[in-house]
Length: 176
Image (cartoon, rainbow, N blue to C red):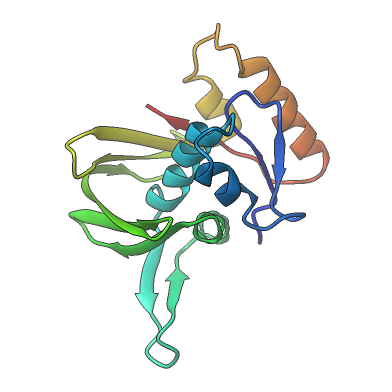
């Protein structure tokens, strides 16, 4: 399974990873880009919020990912291709490389996906002491968490419907 498309922030632009692999990396690198900050938060969510086990292959000395879900593998691989590489994970911290710079997050809580919540969340603290909650999950579950007057809600739902119509698996992400 491969990550193919996403919409970020306003939802005005559909980013097509199938057409241009690593297209979000370009946006994140340009602070002036309209969706730059939203793309960063999106990629942090992909890299941090998962049950993937990163490890070094002893034969090739390359970083490889292993995990129980092909969906999560696709998301973590997409983050990596866009400059947000999951490096190490423990019960206490998560280390990622963001556009060539290592960042370590203290793991405060991990709420794994289950059929009741239909979403997964991770709460982390960065080196500056700022706390983040990243959530991803089934569209209906995450959309319920958004404010009804969210200016991007209607456009996001249209994009989700379009992706589903194309036969793609869909999910939503929220950063709080």
